Image (cartoon, rainbow over all chains, first blue to last red; front, side, top):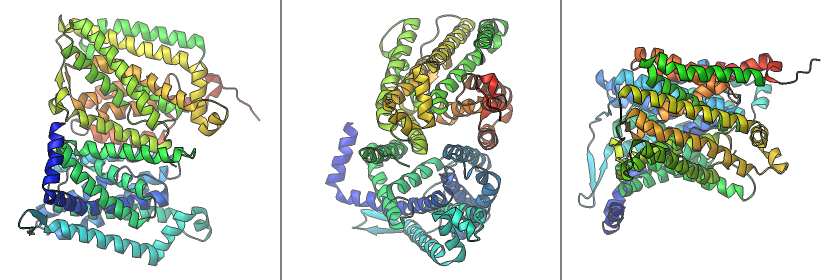
Length: 303
Length: 321
């Protein structure tokens, strides 16, 4: 407890430290928002809460790591990881997800949870249980006379995440498939009547989400680290961002993602880095309780 | 099932439970673990099967029991059995308090929100215990040594955990036959209607979770002494193993049935004991696959499927048209 107060005092006395923490948090927050955008897409269209989301992110990171081992530039990892994950996502949809898509939500929750355990261990078997990272060979910027540092790769990751989000939004607005996806999300029956192959739309949506996570993972492995068992926190962050922002609310997702990143950065400094994951999961419970508590006043509950 | 068959089955299990540790002295620890698994599946089914509240976080109560008991045995200076007994009681008490408090906040959520909130709770609890110096942080705690031979110790725990599982079974069997059982089934089938009928759903939900918690707390209070040490993520708040297994076992056997969780736990535990060592490194791959296969192709479970197939044997009246 005293260590906690000391840390808070330190933050007040050295505002630049706070700037550093918040800045780092905002930069990683963009990646959280990207994964959350994908989760919202799948949730909105297929009505599945994809627990394997975080493992897709980690897998994207490991694909990029493998490419670097083979001497390929990590930046090429972004499109390649996205492509690989697109295929994996499509295969998973065709083997497992389509069977649980229109069933009780707990069934799909548990099925994707099972997939998540499976992928964790598969990654552990293939790439061993070490924390992995890739050096993209970029430098560091210094601000405020060397007190605040920014890794250039983190800024680049932020920018790439933003570009991907814009491209995806354009794709959903303009392209034929994007329109079909939105139509299916609004009313699958009507979409079917109008000749949309909704099963194909579901498969495409799930695969696009996986590709999104793959790209996010490539950014994570360059700017941060990946680990076979570190996926679940990403899933939970995505989930938290989506329930805070609501489905189909891109500005909300971005704001919540950046906010979560900053809050996490400051909290893990105050509480100590060993409590970072505890903070993420504790915050999840807190957000759910508060949101549900507000609804309970009107005798409603989260649906 | 009919009362007569229940009695026969229960007696057979009791005979097996008393004889098995004597006949197979080498497998006493595995037999003790078997009863722990049976208890896990039963306590999960109170919420998940009978009440329709699928919890990923029941492991929290188990972990609370583990730690409360370990702290009691460390700090109270009692001899071995008094310490163990006190630890189990304190563990159960703290777990019930936790269930009541958390139930008040979390049981208002429904469906998948409840499931995900409890998932968050389970992992947060493990992470907090893993960073908390008072309970040994990441390196965990050790429990006192059993005052006797290893064989005697294993026999003692095989019987202790059987007693716990049996008491859990009998109390749940009785509870399911009372108004409580009807009410939680009503909550599962349609909570809004149950509430409109004037049932105090909030009280019953909290009570159901407390029933789960008390037995998990008792069981957790003793498991530290069986294993010999307490680890935050591998023993106490072992979400990826115990926490997932309890859900899987209940579903495998047939959730929402009295015998389903027992059957599921026995099948799972035996399969696991026979194959686990050969699957070195691939265990969790197999577990993940098993979850997906059971959930996708066999969501009713064995007894759930049997009940659909032969409803009259389960005391359901069948209208033939």
